[in-house]
Every structure is written in C-alpha cells, then in structure tokens.
Image (cartoon, rainbow, N blue to C red):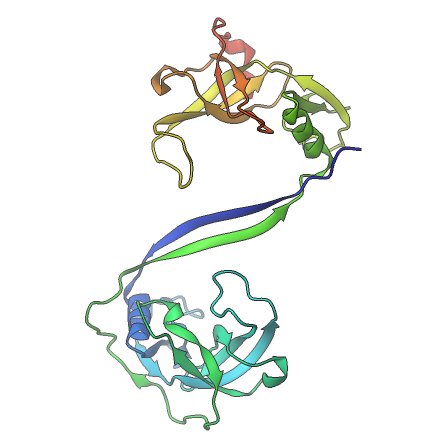
Length: 315
C-alpha cells in the first residue's frame, strides 16, 4: 500500500476590475464615510448598489445615501478567522439592512461571542482608520443601541473629488490536496525517477498522469505501466510573463509531451535549448535535480524529430 500523500496548496491571483459610474460612486463614498445605494425603477434602494435593475434589467444610476446604522437580518458565527479576513478575533458574518435600504449588505460584526449576536439586533458601521475606496473601508459593524432611522434614503449626485475608477482584489484559496491512490503511486514512482501511467482495461489506452479512471470509458484503472522516459513535443507555447515566485527567466517554453508508450500528453517546461529552437516533433527526456520528487524540466535528447503521424492524435 503506497504512502498516503497530502500537501497544503494555495491558488491566488489579483483580480482587476474597472468601475462604472455606480460602483465608482459607491466605493469612493465609502472612502468619504458615505454609504450609497441605487434606486430601482420600482423605488427600492439596493445596498450594495448594482448597475442594472434585477427585475427589469434596465440600467439604473439614481444614487441615494443611506444611514451608517442598520439591522441584522441573519448571521453566522466564525470562531476561527483565517488569514486576510477582516478581524483577527472571532466574529460574526452578518447581513445588515442599513436604515433607508431595502436589501442587506454582507460584512462582519465585532462581538464578544455568539451569545451577543441575534437577528434583529441594531448595529452601526465602524469605519477603518485609513480608507482607500474599498469595501474594507467599513472596518466592521459594531452593536448599536439607537433606534431605526425613519424616512427614505436621501438623493445623492455621487460626485466626489478624486473618484476611485478601478480596484485590484486578491483572490486566494487555501486547501489541502490529497492525490488519491492512482496519483500517489504515480508520485512515488517519480521520486524514483520513473514515470508511470495506468492502462484502461476497456480501450487499453495508457493515461499519464493517472487519475484512477479512464477519461474515455469511465471505468476504473488499476494496471500500472511504466512509460517514457523519452517523449515527443506535440505542441508548445512561449511564456513571456514571469510568474511571481518562479525562479525561471523569460522567455521559456511550456509544451505538451507525448511520452513513449502513453496515450495522453502531459505538459512540462522545456529547458537546455533556446526557446526559439523548440519545435513540434522534437524528442525530449526528463531532467531531475537534487532530491526533487518530480522532473524539473525536459531537455532535447538529440534524436531525430518524430514524424507528425506518430503524434498527431495527441495534439
């Protein structure tokens, strides 16, 4: 029985968005401690605002200012805050209908414990000390003893000095990956400088890397077979943008490689050759460095190029 492998993984990237007039006014307003909503064609005030009426799909730009106080409509307690969440201590996720609004805003409530949170409780905004024009300008909500403010939301022209026109939001997902039986066996073989796949009992194709099931027939695969290590470049791309944290000079080449004996191409970096000399049909072999559990890259073997007909089905 192979070792059961696990590894912590993080997927992250910056999400960049240009703002239209409604979102620009909303975020700039937060910077100025002003909460704006947008009025729909039937008179409701939506906070946070949207650019199109959710009922009629018409464009809407009629801005209205609502109060910084409101009522919790529902909540959930978060006992263990994660990295980059609004508060470092346990808090409640809350939906708050601000006074003057007809919809609820999702944010966090600073409370000593779940016993101090309830649906219907009154809260108010605690503004962040430094504000830049983002939803985080609302540092959090806090309990508030005042009554609900009556009256409709006040019209607002949405005009501010130095309006915010774009935002960059870091998207991040932390998770623990468990590769499973098939991939664990494959990774164990890679640590021994061997490349393995699994053969489908129905179509007899060998898939690398294995997934424990044939992607064509949908049946389980258990028969392990060794492939390569030599293979053929079927197609490739030249990378001109340096990845954050990657110690690889640009430009470099990533390629699909059909390993000898495999019926599915895998992708890997090509090294040991100038990027503009990589070509379809080029024969390559893996290069391991140090005690790495997988090849660092593939390099040319010096063999004659493979004929197109030998790899055309694996493009």
